[in-house]
Length: 113
Image 1 (cartoon, rainbow, N blue to C red):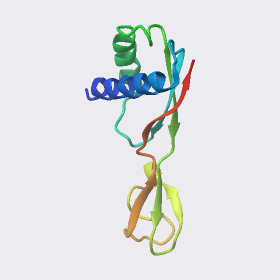
Image 2: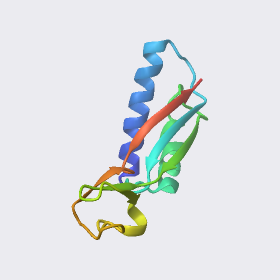
Image 3: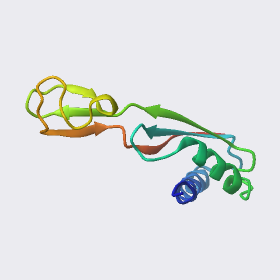
Image 4: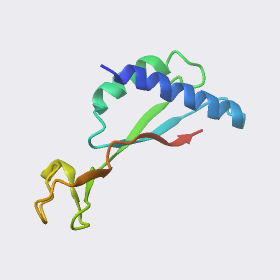
């Protein structure tokens, strides 16, 4: 379960942002999580609750997330398509000359105080 390690990084970054802005209490952290990021949201939530409650700044803070769809780009026909539905092979032209545009993000979108 790598979600615990990710939670430690989230906490580190939130604490740093809070220190820079003179924030004493965080009420929520909102994340963008890509559909193919390998993060299991339920595990992330469990790890968050355990770790955040050990920090005065984050005790009781909610973790919310938006799942961002994975999108692949075809370099041959220049089409974008859903990665999960079609994988590496472009459904428009059949090419495998493709790459992931988005959908593997794990980022802090907002910190609510």
